[in-house]
Image 1 (cartoon, rainbow over the protein chains, first blue to last red):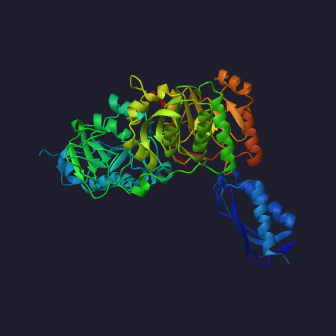
Image 2: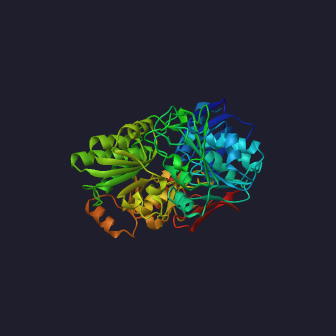
Length: 89
Length: 468
């Protein structure tokens, strides 16, 4: 498994999109989520993020997401893009 | 020369005899540019008057200072037809002891006229007035066009105060509200911010989903059996509704169909349809943009109407009862076709019926146009958070993924199926949306009543609860 090297971002603050910011972690996955659909889909979003991180082989990351009602496929794409931009050792 | 002009709002409030516990009223033609409600309420607060009921036809973001007057006990109760989210959010948190009463644009004047919701002092913002109170919205630097919602206030309030920023010489011609109703006139520097009163031309949507819905909506109208000589129509100012009007206009011109009237909140787009010959007349309770304001001022075919004439269920007849088709929006619609336009997906107040349920009840075809999901929230639910318009008054839901017809209207369904349109079951639209979004968990609501939705017939349609 790997750790993020540098800070990177993906996405926008537009409705139906998500903004993702990643950076070096402190030895684990540190996820913060702010979402307009937290009550309805908070758990589903966190699950989708962890799935992508696991697929990317990333277990050391600080990741902040501001979600404006993005579908799962959008969340996953934005997280993957941010992780790839951040690079892993 | 006789005059009812007094020196200040304070003097008008004193002369009108406003006391603790009374009801004051306001109209919303100055929309998000209105200065009058805040100025008057500040003055009333300054005079130490408390526990008032505010009956406002709508409350916009610019009326946020009203929240301060709720907290300092100047305002004890609110009656309105629409409340923007900037005001609604705190109301939903339970800052009022008494629930807000929501009515419709037709229900409000009906209840004022019948005495069910009497008004002690009406404060009427008017872009132009003469010294005896003959006034209009068509002229002046703050011109807003129609003053439709203010007529009931002027006719039935105990005392009527006109607040204007342009005093004309007597008699003002082409008046809307006449001096027979008016007690006092106050001249102020500005009644509103023109940038917030009317918008520029609203653009037709370029969103491909919106365009698909709009085209389907126009086809539903075309095949409804109602699109013929004498056709009458109302639509909102939303991007997809306007796009539907564009497609409808093309069909009407191509097939040489001449309608009778366009109704409602009037936009430049309906003015265009008037000029193109799609309609013979426009009936206007509220102007949405500058084109509409100019048209109502200049074109005799474009007529101002009062809210009572527009939609009152208590009137001997109202225009909505002669309406063929209305296109409306929805925050949520359930599988029984009940529509919510009062609360957002978390239960916060962010709107209100306005003319939604009036036109749905009156029109032969009430169409809801909405995407199947909006920012991950499916539009179709098992039960809406709040019933704004009952499903019995809604005929059809048009989405980008298909058209669902209310089973109550079997004739319409047959016509649309015969026309080859993509008719689906409303439960399928819910499934399709949830396939994309996942199944949303219901938000937890509080137990405090913060809003009551009063049906057109005066019965309680639904209760809005606090947000935890």
